[in-house]
Length: 330
Image 1 (cartoon, rainbow, N blue to C red):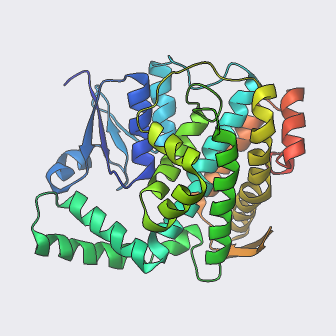
Image 2: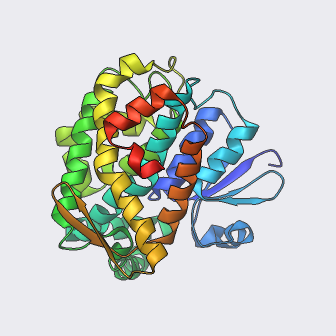
Image 3: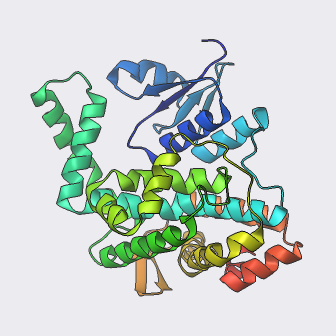
């Protein structure tokens, strides 16, 4: 056990399955430990914040936050690489990873806890995961507590009756773009998973197992559905593609990032800096409002720093300019 990484997580946590997927792909010796009452004492030893995933290293250190976890592990297990050798493609992959973590989570979390059918299904699943050996009454009690707590937390991702039709539109548009892109390819950048796949794949996998989003995915995105489940056991099935082969269907996805995600996260950062309790940003389809969130602002800062390191790449600048992304990254 001394050489094994322990991943404390939940099957219903997109960030947990993201890290587990990465560990499986890299062949990292690990143990998946569902966070339950039985594992709580061990979990608390390593968790500075009450979140999953939390990883206990063989050196008995605790790691948290899925992206830093992967970056830490990637320094220790560089092969097979999840970063295309082309610097432009490597940045685009990192951009989509960030998009998945922040925007993809908004789409997933809103739908999971907005409609009653999704609320009840999610609460029941989480209760059973927490009490795997509980009887019917114990599971029902946990489900009621989970439902009460989680159904009131949608404001963190901007979930509201006013935003609901907008968020559903964002989700369906994203499905259509990904469906076109994943026709005939296994992963977002070719024959093997990139950084981008882990960030976006975890969020959309969770969408796939929920009633409303899962139904939409089965109806409109069968290739997306295949990819989501492929990402639970990803493999190296070939090289990364070139920009020339990716461009016809990746360009529209990047334009989506430039239309929705980047204006939204930039508006969030401005509102937080100004101390505003709420911000509104004009996005295609209508004005979108929500309270600002600190984590989004921090992660945008990291993304901008990453871009600054490659901003002199002429090919990348052309791609980002055409997608409408550049103004939000500087």
